[in-house]
Amino acid sequence: MTVSALPFVLREVRAPEDFSAIAEVRTASSPDWPVSAEQIERERANRDPKLYFTELVAEQQGRIVGVGGVGHDDFSFEEWRYWGRLGVHPDARGQGIGGALYTELLRRVRERGAREARTMLSDQPHDAPGRAFLERRGFRVAWERFESSLHTAEVELDAFDGLLDRVNADGVRLISIADLADDPQRDQRLYELDWQLFQDVPMGSVLTKRPFESWIKDELQDPNMRLNLSFVAVREGLDAPLTGPYVGYTSLGWNAGGFYYIGMTGVRREDRGRGVAKALKVAAMRALQASGGGLIRTFNDAPNRAMLGMNSQLGFRRTATRYRYELHLNGEPQ
Image (tube, rainbow, N blue to C red; front, top):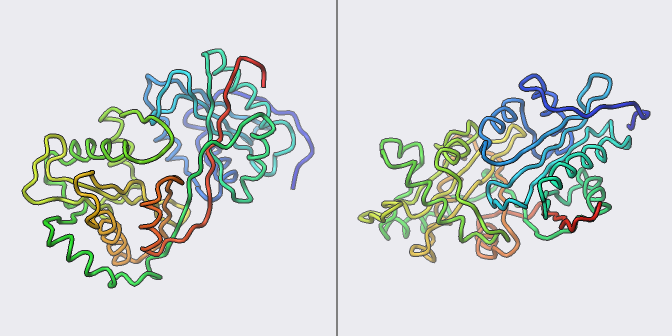
């Protein structure tokens, strides 16, 4: 239900008192990926202070009804490229709130010489207003990412015994990140491995290597990451200069919306084609099922046919498409 148009103001975020209201707006705007005040606080605390970021809220009769932020993309940093997100609570739409947030945020990055702005929305009904909003302002779809899901209870996990036996016979052990805690080089090795693997993921962008400390905070120290359900492929006898015996890994996190998500699955080039990536996912699925089971969501870019095919073989089924929208700025008002 849309309320009658009421006055609103844009203002800077007040930390931490605004975090709960911001989480409410973001969750209402994107119900498929709920967030909490604690997550908002972690996002801000972990943000690289060397990278630009600005955020505003829209307040109406003392209630925060909209939030928007835009800044440099730490995964694909270019001084002139910015990544943004904007949300208005569904019951406060149609009053110009989103447009006002957008106009002010775009003004700020234009002043910094922005040449490109990016964001991402899904093909789901709750994102339809947002897609129309972007398209009216000149944004165009530049990339597709497919979402797939499965529930561990619906998969015959024993059917993969042979795969795990072959991987083990090839000298590769699958060990949870939690069980590797005694390795003093674990974190550094995973950091270097993650960077190697991400460079081979077809994401349609040139990637930026994050600082080690930032990666640790965002990945291994994320309270939503389940290190006991995330597995590393360890090859016996190997001691690579940066990654030691680690040749691949898969990570599994938890979202309060009631599902798990795969953050990364990959294997170094020298060990591909041997079933290791699939075995890693099976190990994670088995560990999850043993702990009570659950729904897993995963996201793969359209050109990543190998991973899409593997997920299909494991039982994942396509559920949504996420679109990366881009606006190429040419100095003219939008």
